[in-house]
Length: 154
Image 1 (cartoon, one colour):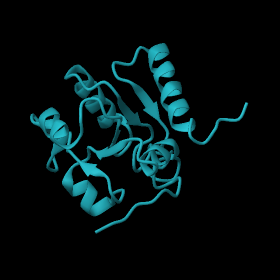
Image 2 (image 1 turned 180 degrees about the vertical axis):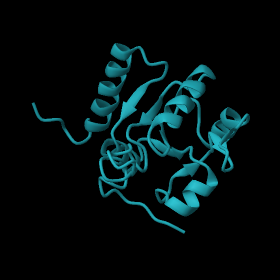
Image 3 (image 1 turned 30 degrees about the horizontal axis):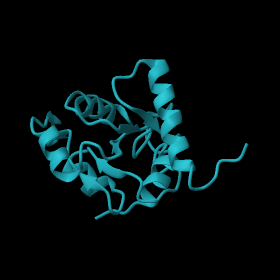
Image 4 (image 1 turned 45 degrees about the vertical axis):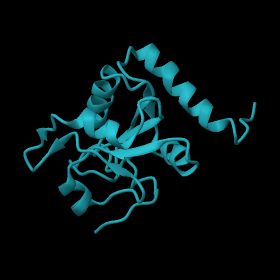
């Protein structure tokens, strides 16, 4: 059965929620970078980059994305104001997609946001750069950039 283009965002989020329930995830679920871009581009979700300012500046970022660091500095010290900063940029009932380098920090951030009362927080699977490959390099196997999605660099 084909999914109507207007129903596609809801189908994406529902599938993510069902997978999250099956996996007992403590947040709404995970979406692929391609699905995250669709939701963001259609205005159905806020895309929040949780990487450090340094990562965004030197590695690149998604145009129009918001920035609320989960951790800061080169030592990636946990940001104690993360939830407050997130709430200042997005509503607790808004669909929020969290993006980091590989999907690990954004999963932690999604869990913290959910525990703080955000109801529709999703992790962008694979992250901006993707997983390490056999040569211990990112960007060759998966991730936002690997899929050819929009990004820019300072």
